Amino acid sequence: MRAHVGDQLVIESTTSGAARRDGEIVGLRHEDGTPPYDVRWSDTDEVTLVFPGPDAHVHHLEPHTEPRTEPRTEPRSELGPETDPGDLGRRVAAERRRQGLGLEETARRARMSPGYLSYLEEHPADPSVAALIRLADALGTTVAALRGGGTGLPPGQGHALLHPRLQDLDEGECRSLLSTHGVGRVAVTSSDGRPAVVPVNYEVVGDTIAFRTAPDSLPAAAVGTEVAFEVDHVDDALSQGWSVLAVGHASVVTRPEEVRGLTEHAHTPPWAGGERAMWVSIRPTSLTGRRITAEGQEAPRAGGSP
Image (cartoon, rainbow, N blue to C red):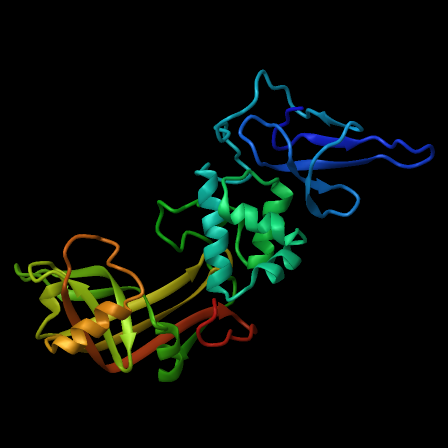
């Protein structure tokens, strides 16, 4: 028996008067299409791992000349640009953890088995459109976002809200949105006198923002000056977002114990790679922020998604 994602698995009844059972094959465990399969049953909408017996057969919903051993390459316009199937699982896992959702709760919201969700996060898979829609809804995002649509474009390409509400954020909420780490933008003046804005991975330690760089890099121009540091989040699906702006004096971290502590507790190495051993700290003297939501909508708690 060989099957493809999207085919129908039919279990014929061996008992007189009993109804047969069928479901969509939503995941393969072997590249050659042999069992077992992840099947979403039409009667319960649940996904289970199935080892078909002699009473089962596969109904191919589309013609195939040979088993598909590589991810499908034909365009799927309803889902957005095609990406490596493994990327989908990584995006699902990252979004789930970002929202603080456990595997069981996410699976419950998406009406799928925790086992299948775990498999989807850890292996290349090609779930059905219906499964992706439910999963996106459970995570409060879009199918296109889960599949990586628009990753090569700047955020904010959606339509503006009909009745937006612009809200100033207090200092406490700004600090909460800065969180513990992330990617922010530091505004500096380059050696030729021109202004520049550079993205950097940052850490928040107490009241200080710190980032790693190299002594001869553009972000290093911040040292000894008053700089602006900005972080933001944009939700294209809901046309909402927030931004936080910190202004303060930048200086090099020189005490060995502080450098060692920052390096040991950093959440991630600089995404740009290379040797970046110089830590620059910014102690904000001003911390302001704004949030855009729909008029009449209650603002989310600090630190949550807009």
